[in-house]
Length: 231
Image (cartoon, rainbow, N blue to C red; front, side, top):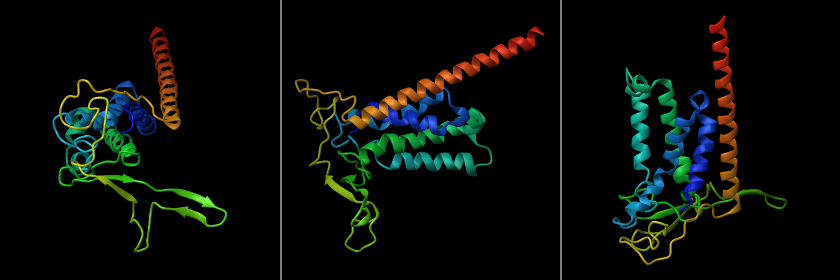
């Protein structure tokens, strides 16, 4: 699975891009928390076989949350979320849901370990593996969408195994199987590749700039209000 720090960085980038006027430290914290939430299924794997990249990576939780959120904010006469948290709460909730899917589940589905999307109704881990390139001989070549009968379908899903045959090691559960492996070597990966380090550095830099700008604007507003009062 992708390092949790990378999920958090992706979530921070999404928050900075999508929160708009709702951007502040608290809202960013909520969005980043949503991005790292799927990784908590590694804890459940200590007791539940095959829970890693399955229990909280399956489609059911975000699908249910999305339906409830849409019904409450778009279809219901009086939105309970909007009444309690205002427009800001609604924006943060939608961005947090996007972070859960894109930043939390996405890196694993399009990464190397794969995701059990239909757990517990399904018992297979899937990985989206494709490419997009321009060749001077073949022109534009992509393998993400196939229209032929022999193609891999809309998405090139590879089946990696089932909960019985496929285990994903993590720092919490080194062998990926139920039970505590007290004597096993544990490795906590903060980043695994150079591009992941770039994502983390970009997220940290962007947040520093945005928070610094927000702080300066807040101090400017406070100074202006004080000047008005003194007059």
